[in-house]
Length: 369
Image 1: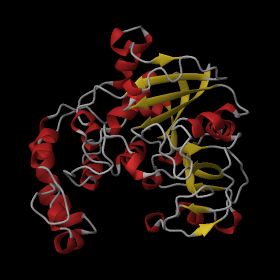
Image 2: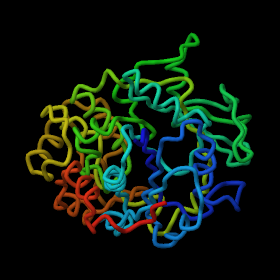
Image 3: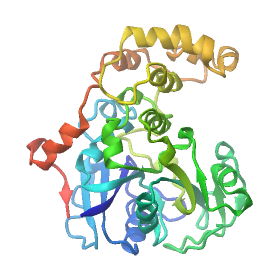
Image 4: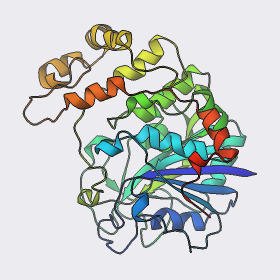
């Protein structure tokens, strides 16, 4: 039995790390997973650059299974726009673990990470991981968006020369672990893109909502929201000893397959609250509808959103819901919005995963070690 499936998505070039130009994009996570004390896990990489490096794992001997699979076909990546939900959903189709942990590729973990995830899961939790940026080898910048300042790691590590002596820690850490707490029950809004969940729970909510694709934000929090709607909210928690170490990347090394910045087409927040409004935990069971768009534009944005005035006065291009063209300093795309409205978003992940298990040729492309 495979206990944990570690799912990573990426669109990075081969050598994206600041101050470490010879470090391959896969090396941080590979090296830290090689040192895991718990051996019953697999690594799944859903790669937007797969066809440029499809042979990377063919002659690599590792003490764990690797499934390196292409992100394509992906209607959004093929248009140089983010299709993250489709990437994660494809990873879910390939998992064989009882617990899923999903994140991006540019992270490292301590040797007890998989062990800690599994132990907390067996105690009834879906552990969420907090994270820090490690600047030991460069990449200085302020992270105003994550709300903390330069410090040192609260728990020791030394991986590939990164040692935690110059880090920025995200803001959930201070909120969660005041007074030397080791565990903190988490609200669904803390379900970030570095979290775990049981396979059964993820299949129950039918994965990541494809309606979030085309843009980058809040798709992970939506998973937390729908887990909450499905009755799993009580399982979400942060633990002091379950965290990720992020290696800073050079944004100029982001692959041409998917530019770091692409036109935005819609506000993601109303999508979360529409599911809560109709009390529907299951994603991808319907396509975009006029009724849904009408509710978001005429009800949620003007009446319920707590940043309505901010949008009206400072971000008029994004109010209400649909992002509009023609505003200086902002790039939106009407054609992509129309594509979003008309792209089918119905999928049954449980059925698709079963097809993969039964050997459907649709899921044969990839490198499996």
